[in-house]
Length: 289
Image (cartoon, rainbow, N blue to C red; front, side):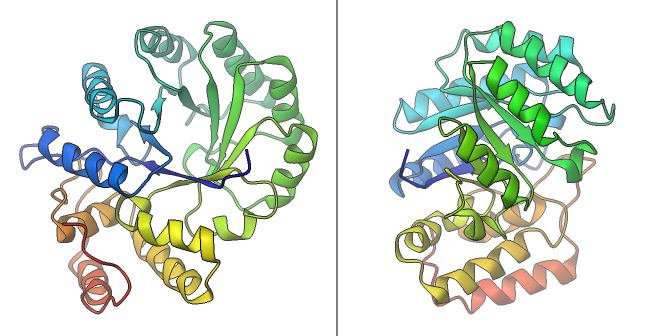
């Protein structure tokens, strides 16, 4: 696959009462499709999946599939820190026409490398669905070694992708050389640029919920001014725990409200002021709505 893909880690909009705002979700999906997104990651970290009830996850998935109708890829987040619970989600997801399943490393448990291998091997053996491994050590407290990834890629034919929320591009180069059929995605908005020529297949992005058009322009042009601009956007997106900042940006764009579910909270006033000052003087981005 030669095209560098931009997939959006889709937020889950909430109303003031904490219910899923499907009108806002429809607006967001429509904008993403209009701007040519390559894929949507549904019920991942940015979608606040850890605060969603199981029926909410599948309600959102049905809604996204009905709205996209194969206009882009749709990957569904199924990962938990319990193998049995993950297997139950994977089994139920087989009823839906998704392109694949995103499965995060078990968080809090801090399994050994053998534990990671057995967790993902058990999941892979249970399904015919395509699987994307999700490595995010800053949130999960555990990371694959190169040897464990190579073992899983070799032993599990339906593991076809990795979301790598780390800056270890030597690992990416090594995996790309040995497993060229595996799709390797950056999970870092601030640094994916450095991996574009080192084996990355694309990026799974938070800021593309608002800045997809600018990201696509950069991928095509490699323009240095856009590089600096997007670096600033990425920094702003993670001034506080994501997705609070991107939701505040989306609220300014009229896409959804900035509401998040506890234990996440809205941005501090100073952070809002910093983001508002940037967006208020932005000469590059055109408002989405």
